[in-house]
Length: 99
Image (cartoon, rainbow, N blue to C red; front, side):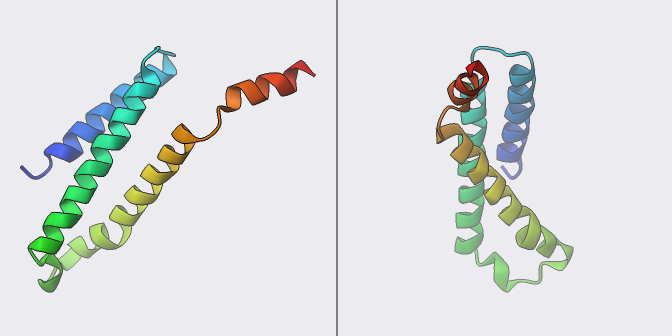
């Protein structure tokens, strides 16, 4: 079971990237799906690690994942989410260009 969420998120991210670059109509929906699946997978992993007391065992080099990768993943997901729910910049930019 470990890794399926990461694999699904990576596949959705690549699919969303291609859709955005080709200006596919449903590209934003794919980005939403990628962010939601990634966040659910991350939250699930955090809950499971807390339930199983993973942090009471020696992590070895895997501490890098806990200390660097997970916070970076959460921050980048939050920034994408904020960009998705923020104001539509295309109408503001078009209005500024029309002047």
